[in-house]
Length: 263
Image (tube, rainbow, N blue to C red; front, side, top):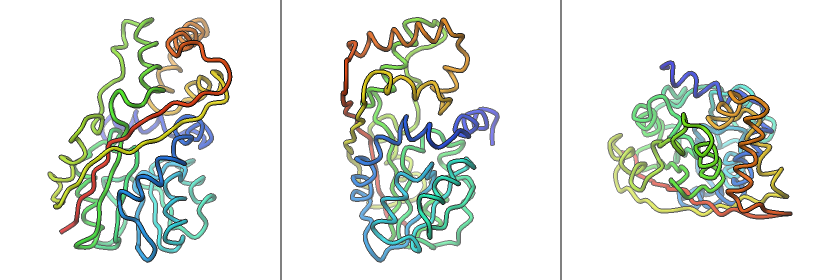
């Protein structure tokens, strides 16, 4: 793992509740849509790569039963949470670039909101294909660039105050064709791609803002570099960028997905 990748990984070694509040609130909508796109159904053996606290894993277990689902993530607190929430599933600590499963062990291997954070996405994609049986499905999804308003608003507000920030950093998976290209280079065939909808429901602005302060991911790492005054200024800029919402509100998001067939 490179120094950059190691630093990026450390941003996810945080309590699962933080991720639940930041991104997990979008999973009740995104996970079923992604599982549908991947064709996950009863009777299949399925692997969730980069499972986090288990938002997608729970959807997979509901479809195929726990004993037919495996999941893996490098974050120990996320693994513990996924195990607790999905008894019967085979949940392990490990990385996508070296999956501890046999060749052809699964009918479908899926990965949600992960590809942009991998230390070596090309190796991980080949690993996902390796553990999928011939004719099985490999699928991944990631937030579409400029279509995840919570992230976009945060970085836009940060850039307005901090010359070190140049908007939302680009990641693999952000743009149309990124994931499809990744699967094609890894050796998948019959590739399809599209867009998945998701929604995040917030009780109020504090419910939107506070998850950014919990240390999760690159945003959490950035907020930790700020002093109290800088955080307060960023909170105000984000509130202004959102139009100063009062009371409950919903943000609509979209994720790119692609699926391919293992050979």
